[in-house]
Length: 405
Image (cartoon, rainbow, N blue to C red):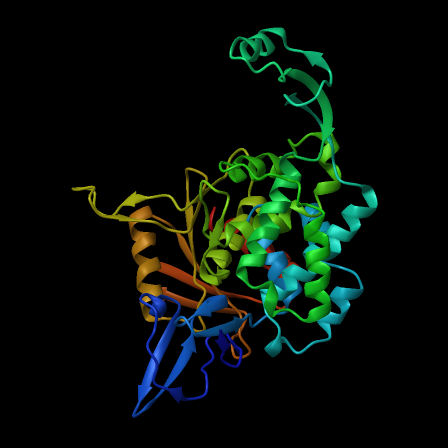
């Protein structure tokens, strides 16, 4: 597999010779034709994008990797404590931070962080839990008389079935880590430098005896973890499970009946991540008895018929007044976005509309627009400083709520 020189979101490659592309590749990139050459322009997707069976494109984030990982965790609903312990730290990470982001991608960063946490987990010792096991080739524990007699009736006098409970490493958190390591190997660990690749396979061998069930319920694990409902003896895994789940959530995994794994490329849709991230911030900010926050609520576009609908990203209301918020991961304000949120405002009878974009170097913090009796505020969220920007956004929303309500 060959790789074009890495680019960042919305950047364009140097001209290359005409090539054939995988079907559907233009969902992830734009292709510009010029005589006998083409240029490929990245969209809002970051990661490794296969263009065809021989050529791939690496698209990096516009923002520092540690910020990106923080944003992805927040978008997935993890609290600040889990995020702070899950963000990769240590000497390997310091080495990463010193590198030029043009030659480094989110996949590499996550592998480094995962290895750091695996080494830390090794100092604690891997979790073992009681597990029942049936033996037919040796006597260990309690002899199961009925099953043993069934074998003897069939002439298998060398079989004695026993039941024994023993401590096993074959449990849910270790299975999640094993699945993650298998997925990373399929995704392209061979692209990493030799030392990190060597460390990866050393850590992976520690999980060779772990069996991953075909129907491992990752959603249930993630749900319980976000709400602090995992058993107390899983505490030492709280630093590594968010990383594993984040990786597994951004690939499509197929596990056949023989246990063979095939995966799609690791690609992060920043449009979706940004929308979910802002929704989490707003939801956390406005939890009260007299104020409700609706995320992605479907509303009929016309009162006369219900076949067409609109879906605002966020709707804040207190049964007296409403604010509608729409989140756009774009480089600049588009007229269509303004028309869209005005439509949302009229249909939901909202007093104020807020558009939120990621901040660029040319943006002001806030821009105001008006249309007849409706006001639209455009807010630019600075992802270079996400924690500081969260505080500013909350402050702005609170001030607008006081005016509206």
